Image 1 (cartoon, helix red, strand yellow):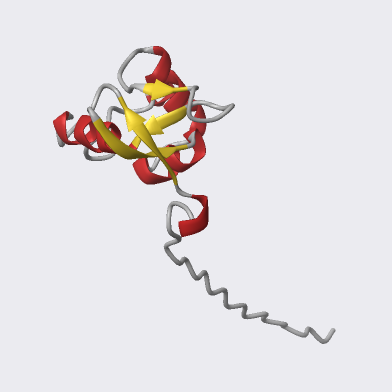
Image 2 (cartoon, one colour):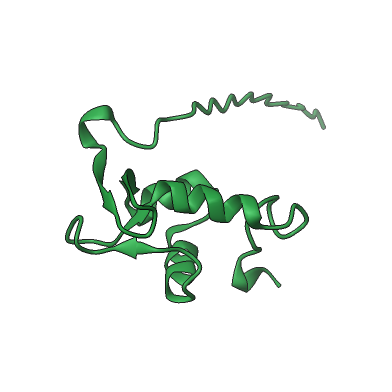
Length: 107
């Protein structure tokens, strides 16, 4: 009996490119009463991308009062970018992914 051995070699390349949070035309700037300044407001999706988490986690932070937001800027909630950055810097380096608390369902 004769046997034939067939070997298939595959190669896969994954290319990841960083994308800006928003295109310049889509940036929403408005007054933030808590910061007392005109700031850039992010959608929950943009905030999640900036923080490295999913949108559901961003909504958890909003509900917990960890981040301030406004629904007056647009129909959907918008998060103040400077507040998000300040809040992220106050978190301990060993919590979760570096600067933000670990997702609630990760434990």
